[in-house]
Image (cartoon, rainbow, N blue to C red):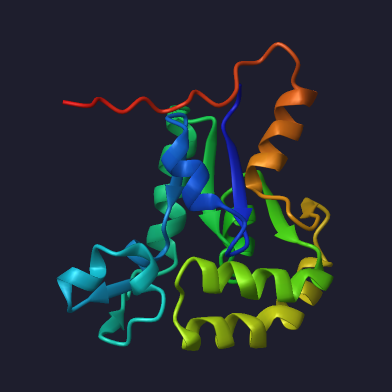
Length: 180
């Protein structure tokens, strides 16, 4: 199976998929976008999303694109999961990296608000996401490489669809955790 890059909207299940399957890597943009001054916050993926004790990494977003490119060309993973940020989409294209954007349907704003609450995102993060929702959905409409998730669907549903289309390909090697 050729490595696929998925640009996924917040709340679709990138972290879950990356933590569940060994042939999937979730590249959290925070590691490339920001320099954190509080190391405890830096280790917590969800707390980083609205941390103010940080500064912009001067290499952003080129360092992120380069990391994605290196992983893509290594062909070690079936899926590389990338955060949805409009500034990275043209850079992925310019680098010649094929990608699919996976997003919720625009009418699912309330469902995604509930997802953000369920995963303990801060009120500030949730407000920002909801404020940007309509603009993000309008920008997405200009792309042809988009897969829309319906209500109650997650990224795992998209991967299952792709695997079904690629009959005979091994997809989703479940991670095995050693218990001592």
